Length: 241
Ligand SMILES: Nc1ncnc2c1ncn2[C@@H]1O[C@H](COP(=O)(O)OP(=O)(O)OP(=O)(O)O)[C@@H](O)[C@H]1O
Ligand SMILES: [Mg+2]
Image 1 (spheres, helix red, strand yellow):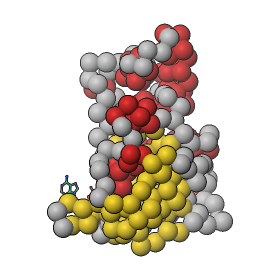
Image 2: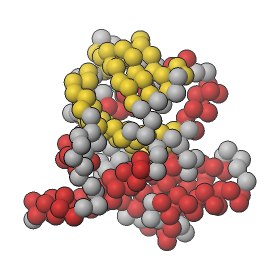
Image 3: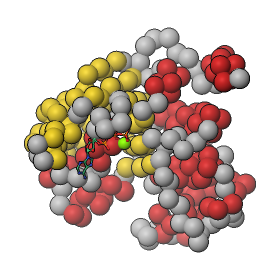
């Protein structure tokens, strides 16, 4: 589904992506980790065509996205769901309106919008909060709404850049479970984080970036630590206290 081939991105002489080769199959869950400044966000921004690379190619479903003209790029971006640490909901719109907005600007019929918005609010467990404004939500709830907004188009690819960066332990667990659920339902998920603990918990494919280079690419191991199973959480909780 996604192929980075020999991608180089420079700021001045600084190679922020340094000969990056990466292949992701449809339906995979990839955790992208590495220290601050390693190039994780740069890699994700390159993948959504948000920045120009200096050389190499980025193919998505066989299309060279670096060659997309404006209209093709817009259409492509609409097919990708994106979630960031700072989820930026519109403050003067309710939860429902924030999620519906993304479909309204595409001119979808009202009834289809309602059906789709309720389906994704249900998916993220925020149906009961549909009439609230962002200031009335806790951080974890706000991030769940942001994920609903990203999923409302039914994207096959969800890109999450440090989505739990501002969240506490409990909310982080909820967001991880949600990302796994979205992946179970068929979407490819790319999650960037500098929190190594999340990687062990998720037990999915791990790609480690350091100074713009992929230094480790470890497939999901056979031993599956399910997020539903109590022990993982319990161990963490005991360590916290
Ligand atoms: N617009 C820019 N101009 C110059 N340098 C930049 C620019 N954007 C990013 N960089 C540099 O590129 C490098 C990689 O940044 P990036 O944001 O991709 O790191 P990251 O791995 O996402 O880090 P973090 O974990 O802190 O989010 C950093 O050294 C950063 O300073
Ligand atoms: Mg980043």
